[in-house]
Amino acid sequence: MAKKKQQQKRAKPTPKGAYEVALQADAGGYDWGWPATEMAAANMELIRRLSVGGFTGCGYGFWGPQGPPFISLMGTNLAGMKSAMALIREWSDAVGPNALHLEILFDGPGYVISLSQQPELLRLRLTGLDTANQPTLLSTSISKPLDTRQPFLENLAEYSNEPIAPIILTVGEQPVARSGMPINTIRFSPNRADAIMLPGVNIYQRLEDRPAFSMVRAHEEGPPDIKRGFPEPDRSPDAMSRQRQRRLKAALPKTLHVLRHREDGIALIDKAKAAGCAPWQAEQAICNLRIPDFLAYNPNGKVKRLSMLDSIRSVIVEPASALFKPDTIDIDAVVEQAALDAAFLVRRLDEGARVAGDLAGLNARLQELGHG
Image (cartoon, rainbow, N blue to C red; front, side):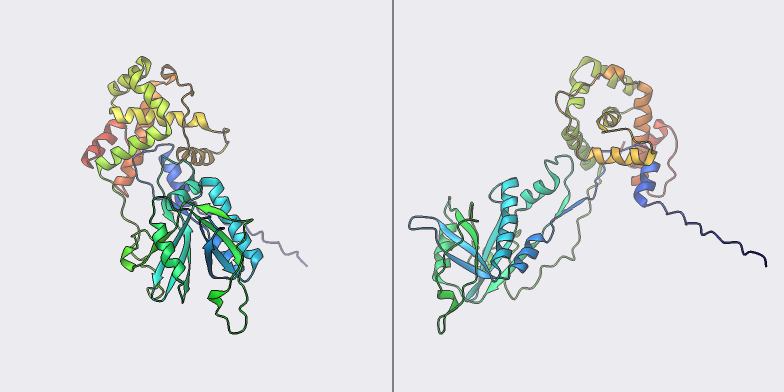
């Protein structure tokens, strides 16, 4: 009986992703003026921890006879509420005491309290001192509607309008009401061990007092409309020129300073201009040639190298002590890089176009597209 040949299954090659295809097509070319669509998103951790804590509402009062007012976030599980407070403290330790955005909106006989993160401080925590890129920010919030409102909150609203109006934030365990006693009259002691001081609280007594950036919404309003989408990036020549200069100055300030103010830097730019580069193309090409100097190591794979270079552009901050010798830059390398950068731009301004040719041909196409 003949033996059956075992058929070997060959794994199908994984199709290349759009990002990898673009990297290979650009071959290291890059225009710093092209608007990139990036997003930084907050996670749901505070919402999760407050949910575990059984967040039910708020307690409030004064922190001692002469102390500032306090707000205590109350829950049925004290350990869970303390965990939420520990997370808020982490934010405060990282970027400052106003990391938490605490808002109260009077709503009929009751009110709504909302907790979120200050947008710019959230951006700082997620992206660091990122002056080169400005990603779209996606934040999260948690709101709790309460049916009744004590007169203390009316006084707290007036206090919150003072120039200096700090408030203590803490957490506590929801007290149990005695028979016949309303829950909102029960006395309790705030948890002092986990408390932090906030610069203030935003209280809106009327719906029209609420600013456009507010995260708090009335109980009957429902969720905000998020169907508008993101605005289209400005790809006009003037906008891209401003973006290019801003990002290059943020990422490679030492290189630009040398090229503009030192004799050997100015001489290199003059050579590039004589070879057909526009001044801004020459500066950008030289900056792009500098990027490999900041690689942590030289990878073996071409795509890996291109990906690492692309990542470095968004995080690099060139120190003033960085060594840059323009006379070590070959003019042919500058022209070649400028052509790659021009091809990068043409490829995106004229989608589907077959990009080929030397720098002069690419610059002619950029002129036709209004970006010369």
